Length: 80
Image (tube, rainbow, N blue to C red; front, side, top):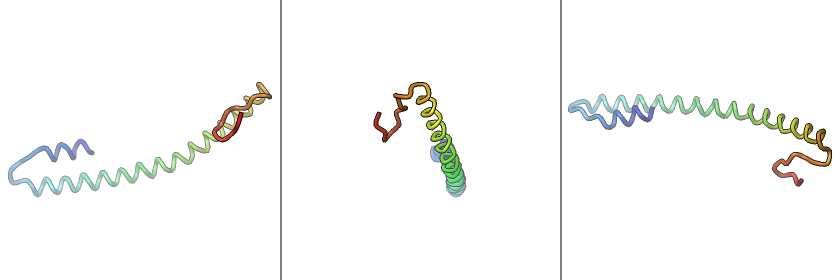
């Protein structure tokens, strides 16, 4: 979208200023729509990924203790 907007801004045709403005407004509206959609997807998926990552860290912690009971997996906030 940004590439199209930049291209429209660089093209200059005599007497087509109104069309250029309309096209830029349309591209801006589409960009905003898709940016909101992307942000929503990222927020939704990040929660799922965070839970999955926490679950996998817990599994690794259990495996680490099983393999060597005196050693714990280093995690932020825990002292070794």
